[in-house]
Length: 215
Ligand code: AP5
Ligand code: MG
Image (tube, rainbow, N blue to C red):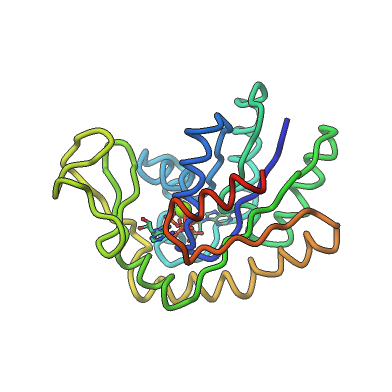
């Protein structure tokens, strides 16, 4: 089984590109952010514990994240490839993932690192909204539905905005990325993993072609 990591700051386009890779190549995406938001929406114990933490842009305990990852891997043991989005997010999480994969005699083949300038990240996050039914991601500055108020993919007319997509929380998320997440790249480098930098300032399809060319 292939294991790929898609890496980048909040708003760099990880979710957008993951969805395209999943659709075209049939690999399965595990987004810890999506899994946590699903727990919050379902009102589960995990969701209740995490809702405020996520809304503030901070990280829930690793025990919760590891449980979600293990459940996902167990359920997807037949997958030909897994793409990790938003995980690992700390060096501790990266150590955990490598240990877990080593136990399963597997490894990370490629880390796709999406680079985007900070001022653009803020605009992307503040403009983001998604279809409430199918989750398709839009942006009021960069990608609006072709018919206003109607999802291009499923035709639904309800949209949602994430609890952490506001100016105050964005600052915390960027700080958490710089302090806790960016060091994961050095950790991967020290272990000689294949890290590929992609220019995430380009339009979505151009970014996608860059990724396709390296896989
Ligand atoms: P998570 O859901 O992982 O969020 P994130 O890392 O902050 O990243 P985003 O989802 O905001 O951005 P993205 O890179 O996916 O960009 P997108 O494609 O949507 O985590 C959220 C929270 O959950 C964390 O803060 C934490 O609390 C918790 N959490 C999650 N994982 C955790 C973990 N492992 N450990 C602990 N806590 C965890 O694109 C953004 C916008 O830009 C969209 O509107 C899109 O349409 C637009 N866009 C995308 N690409 C382009 C482009 N090329 N050109 C123009 N616009 C574009
Ligand atoms: Mg995302």
